[in-house]
Image 1: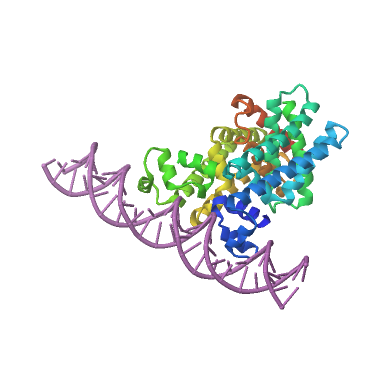
Image 2: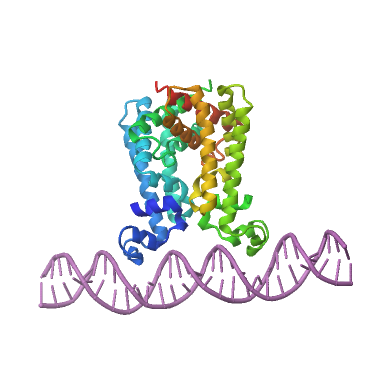
Length: 180
Length: 180
DNA sequence: CGACTACGTTAGTGATGACTAACATCTCGT
DNA sequence: ACGAGATGTTAGTCATCACTAACGTAGTCG
């Protein structure tokens, strides 16, 4: 699945063949059908895995934080860690939902929506006067900011990237409610 | 080309057939070969068009601005307008470079790099103490933020989206150099 | 009129790719 | 030891798709 994620991120779902994925892990082609019922199922499992891990982390982190300020910091760290350590998964996660067939598609959308709502809830506690739609748009914008790591890969070492992204995202969120 | 951009954005380059593109504009399949030498050429032309338009706008705007502060505002407006009005083009632009064959690929990369350097130059004038690598990473992060519009489509009307993105991006950039 | 060009059509063709079938092999528990 | 299940392999099959060929039909200009 890791190999598949890397290939899907690089060339897109339809640009990768079963043979490619098998080859990347040292087996050849149809061996994969012993583990996945098909190419679609592989993608579904990938996205379900990512979505549920993200949501689980978010829930865990928010419930164990004393207040919204700390929750937001923790949410930022979750997403930043994911974006830096698993750039391929992040890339596939927000590009390939359209290629997932219908039963799984709905479930993935649901998990993604719940993850976003986790953010929006925390932000709403911090800024009760801000309408939810605005907070949702801001959340998506912050995701875009944080998920830019695949594009700036190699520009900066991870140890510098991490606080940079944190500071930028934090500032962007504050600006969202306070247009200066 | 607009139809192709929409389809590529939705399903990925390899997920769209020549027949699909033709069908979307009311002709059927091979008619497209009267206008493009092939599917690759269509994609190349799309990306070349976008990259050069972006770079041209950036150069025009920067040279006609009195100072870096105004230049940055103008650059933000260029990118925001593009992201809001042409979400499909923006999506294709930062996803499908890997599917462009080699002669055109290099040229597109060059234009993209020049566009980024336009931003980095302006930012360097505003923050001379900040290393260029950091500014480059921040620029990519801001692009990610602004290009999030396809994800939050429909959340917010464009008239609200525009100043929101502007404020968030502005704040993120300031935070980049001033980690608070 | 009559050639030429621009632009469309339908009917192949050859390659690629997802998936299946039939056939090894390796590791077990008994 | 041995049969069973898990996990490979190679050799098809069938659909899809980029692209070509051959042909039709305006408009345009001599």
